[in-house]
Length: 117
Image (cartoon, rainbow, N blue to C red):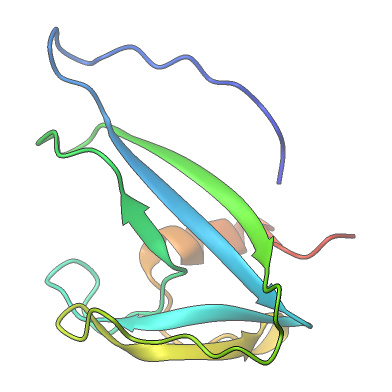
């Protein structure tokens, strides 16, 4: 991951992009992924994410990616939104489940790797 600042202008006056925070939560050589339950990417595997703004915009997204490590490596994730996620699991980076949620798949195809070199 690269630290950089990006200035984003609204596509239309008064419309601001949605802000999505994607967390690559790491444990050893594994990353946490959940099986998505929604009309957008049904039954695909994304990293945990949160949409921070409630502005309705279809194409205007700012994505903030971060890497985190569990303070307690024995702690297990809880599924607190069963209507949106079938559950969470730890997956080795070299053996990710299929199909990945398309933004994560595109990042992987482009060489993204959340693990420090």
